[in-house]
Length: 78
Image (tube, rainbow, N blue to C red; front, side, top):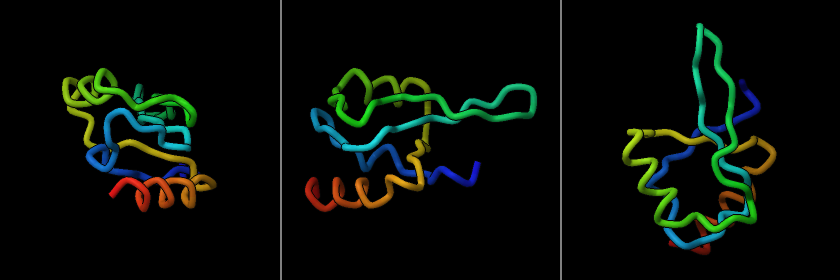
């Protein structure tokens, strides 16, 4: 589990390409697994953002190896 870093969903802007895979954590039976939510080259559209709000997901995850890509996304979108 330490290979992933949490990110705040509010840091993602609609209609942008994030540049790294985004995951959410699913816990079942005391174990957790990361499920791909948005591929790195897919557009993070309004539908994806609305689903986050509907599901009350307050945390998403990126691979630790993609941290620099995420920071680059933040720099270019804020």
